[in-house]
Image (cartoon, rainbow, N blue to C red; front, side, top):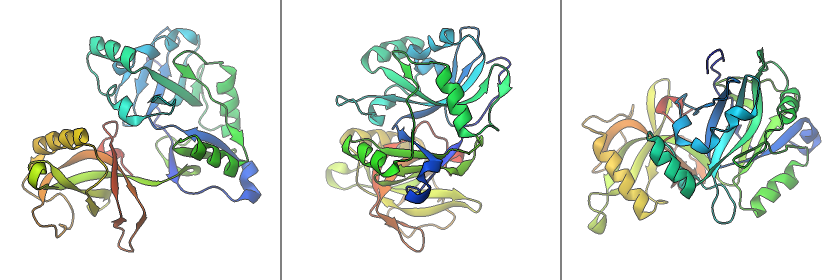
Length: 317
């Protein structure tokens, strides 16, 4: 990564499809259910992968190491790493077995069992030139010209206009949704921008776990519900209790993490009136599905979707 600028990933804002009258001003890309990665290619045959939080995740994905020798010029690219299920769809739960592996030997073994794939969708630095100030269309054209398509990486095409049809296609295929990107948009490092809109088939939100309530009976000692919040200027704001959505394996994993993170003091700015609540350090990040929000900002009918070990609490916005 010597000589390459560190660039934080631009983030999309949750929303809906742009109006049909202006959809020809937008490009639509398939939203993959994986781990965001900034790809640093110094041009010397090596590659460094960094997560959305900035952590070095190169060791976890040895099958992507060969990408360093494919491109002969320095570059910083933006993409998403995912693993496929048996139906050929991205599956975050499968990818979790690949995430956070510090042992190169174990990562190599896991790469044989659960191969990862990297999709590239933006170029932000190329051959000594910063590209963040260029419009999306120019950056995309430069990325396509690199011809980066291989066994473990690809550069999928984007569709201009036809947003409704593209969204229906992802629904039919069982995919997560779309990312709509304004054709004239510049790349805003580290910013959650309205120039990029993520449209999912269900509403989801990243939350920070601040506490839990033990289950009863056979679930004694295991979480019956998680107490979650969102960070804002005043601290951690409570947004609801999540008591469904996880498998027995996920519940056990969460229990282990919660016991390690136990604290005596409530981390929420205003303690929720929940009987039997136990508090934890607000460092676990999860993604929750929900139907809507109340006027007070609480999540209606939330259910657990997945743990987000790739995100740190200060990256949840």
